[in-house]
Image (spheres, rainbow over the protein chains, first blue to last red):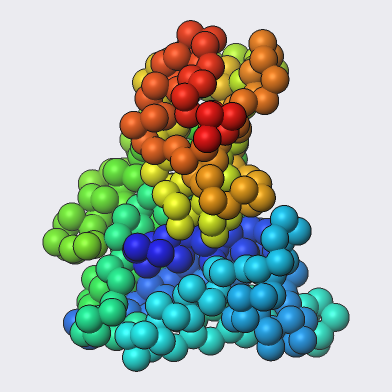
Length: 189
Length: 121
């Protein structure tokens, strides 16, 4: 993947496929490190599946016997000196009824192999466009400042969830995020 | 800064349009958004379709949706188009530039852009 935001899109798609109704995408960044976390309340993965999930020959898809999403991300993180951690719980394994998956990837920005974040705005817009039924919370902390988007707030204003996919609304989301990034002078590439 | 008040204004402007949209969606554009598609450039292709359809004033009867892996990863980004007039058309190795032509000629004009279809590969 040429941009980290593409990995973020790809991994979030797993949460969508896992039947999540809420997906949190959180990025925490300072001068030297970037950590992103994707947390969902989807069906979760069994212990057994988790053990093999970063192996390219493990996949949930039916059209191919290989799945490269998590292996790609693991490689991208580790080649910078960072790491990938996955924790997950299915309904059956849960003691309190909660279930879902958390993927945390950390990167050393100082590494020559660090992939820039890229067009994260497009990633968020793409997720909302594809799954308006899901509540997305996006939060990017950059030092002391932060960029935020919570689709629940937008639905409250719009009244109707299906309006999230209207081109005008997608444009609003895109401009809102880009303005927030511009206001802190963030460089995505 | 973009405000929620602006969003409310968009909502009010759109209310009538949404009522109109029910049941008249006749054309579907489906973009493959699995790992293979994303790595090959499906994200800008999807967003280009959303924009081009809107600019062409077709947002009321054309929907742009996403799907998983179509199974032909080497041809990604793949886009399938379903119109009432023709069978499914599969476009391969799509780019935002090709999107403009497909919307103009196929979606708007009803003529399949054969040179971008899978049969031409």
